[in-house]
Amino acid sequence: MRFHFEHRVDAPIEAAFTFHGNPKHLALLFSDPTDFRILHHDGNIRVGSTTWFEIRVACVVPVALGFVHTVYDPPIQFGEELIHGPFSRFAHLHQFNPDGRGTIVHDLLDIVVSPQFGGEIATRLVVAPMIQRIFAARARCLQRL
Image (cartoon, rainbow, N blue to C red; front, side, top):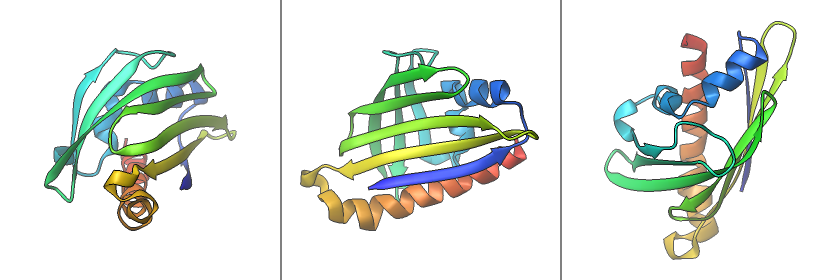
């Protein structure tokens, strides 16, 4: 399932890219930081670097996710792909476009839950609503920051 989220931040493209590219800022982008925990990150998002974190689904079930960074083109875009977790596919591309007064941030995701965890049905019924909530909360957090 593909997702495209777009939001505007009142910051120049370089600042927006730098903020999003710092793995330490991931927890700031969740509405409930108790549902998110960094397990490990290499300190950068350059190609080959990894970021591991845990999220809690339904505030109860911990799920560890590991990503390798596959795209790094500052300050235009960066991206990562899943290397560990319950998905057969999870790719996330972050794109940044100046709009004259700030930056438009685009998040493009391609996500499919592995068949043993429910496949397309779980993607539609469980993951899609969760992703929608996460990115709505992320947009609100960015406006506050």
